[in-house]
Every structure is written in structure tokens, then in C-alpha cells.
Length: 315
Image 1 (cartoon, helix red, strand yellow):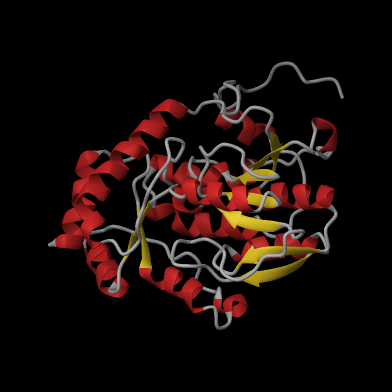
Image 2: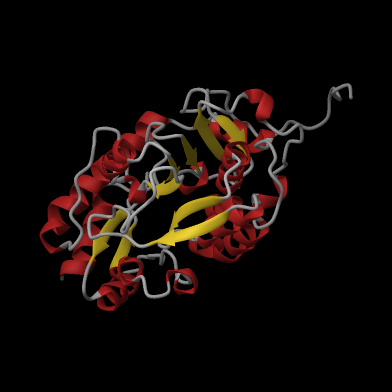
């Protein structure tokens, strides 16, 4: 079709290249994973019980059987993983690059889910990303691996204009007023086919100042970690490539901490509320879910915001 000339001006967006070179851009992170599994042509995938349930749906959508595993205290896979099995390993919280490197070195047949670690480099067989976890985007995902090429991308491109409501409300009013639209958008991402990333999402990515985002998140992490590390049950040792999605504060009193934060007007999600359905008696996975309070530290906030978070917890 010949492009139309004239008419109204579109949203001003950017043309900067995507952060990860050689990434293939899909309409969601879960669909990027599906594209990887489609090429691997495996029958079973070892999957952590402590992960987003949409991952389980993506695996099953490719006629792959998920075999669930629990975690050790250091977040490595618990139990024996057969040498010839493909393992899905989370780069959790954007702070566990060293753990992922350790697992990949011991088990090269690893696909890394970096939904919470956008800035992490490609590791293992493939690494999949969900950039909307780090930036204000309606959708989108990416995969970096050696066995997928641009020829593997679907011909059909998704569109995103009808998934922008929560972003526009948050920009014009505030994030709290965007909650209902955000939930609707999350629901809309279920069950749609593997397609290319929309032109809108790709061009919004072209606006992002990656250096600023990285520095601001690391600066905010430093403030939180300096104050909270003595009380954090989770030991954190980051690599130079790690950039956190949030600060994972693990405590034996999560409900009390969440109550304090909510009273101070600080929202903390739960990752992921329904994992008992797959975790069963995998107690460590459920412990991580219950006891880790994800503290916000994204690029919207500065040191004053982080001080407010610390004071809400410690006072």
C-alpha cells in the first residue's frame, strides 16, 4: 500500500537504536520466549516455580511441557537438572547476573529470562527481555540468540495505540489514577499471537536515554542498599552489568513492612501471588514470593524519594 501523505502529525517519537544489538523485537516478552522455544523444538523445559505464571502459558502454547523446579537459598535451581535438558533461568530483580553466569557455566543449555534485567547481556542459549518492565511502554519484548535471525520474525506486525491509556493517564495525571487502565492493558496482553513489535512501541523505545536510566537506577539502589543491607535477608552481589528493576528487600515481617510503606504512600507489588498452583510443596519458592518486598527505585525518583522509602521502613 502506498503511504498516505498529509493529515495530522503523529506522536513525536525517537529513532535511537535498541539497546541490545542483534535483538529481534516481538510484541511481548512471553512471545519472544515462544519464538525461542519454537526454534529449539524441545518437548520439555525446566522452569522455576517462582516466576510469572504467563511464562507457563507461553511454554505450553508451544506444546512444551514445563517441569517445575524449586530454588536454593542462593536462587540457583534446586534438585538435579539432566545435562541434556534445557533450563529456563531467571535473571531476578536485575541484581543476579553473577548467579546466572554461574548456572550457565555449569549448564550451557540455559535460556535466560531477563524480564527483570533489561540491561543484562545475552547469556546462555538465548536471553529474552521485556522492556516495558523498565520503561513506559504499552507492550513489547526482545530475544537475543544465535539461532534466530530476522528471517524468523513473523511477517505480521502488532499495533499498540489501543494499549496506551495507562501511560497517557500516568503522564498527564499520576500513576495511581492509571491503575485501572494498567490492569486492563495487562489483561489484554494474554493470548495474543507471536508478532513483530509495533511501530509505536519501537519508536517509543527510540526516545529512551539508556545511560540516564541506568545511572539513576543504580544511584537509587545504592541509597537503599546502604541503609537496608543490614536488615535484608537476601544477600545481593551485583556484577558491573546489573541494573536493578527494584530493590529486593527480604524480611521475616513482610506484612508489617508493606503496611508501613502503604501508610507512607509507597506501592509495592507482589511477585507472583498465584504460584502455589505450580509450586506445590516447593516451600523456598513460596518463601521468596512471600518475604521479598520489591521497593521502587526507577528513574522517576531521586535520592529524596529513596530516603522516603528508607524512613518508611526503619522508623
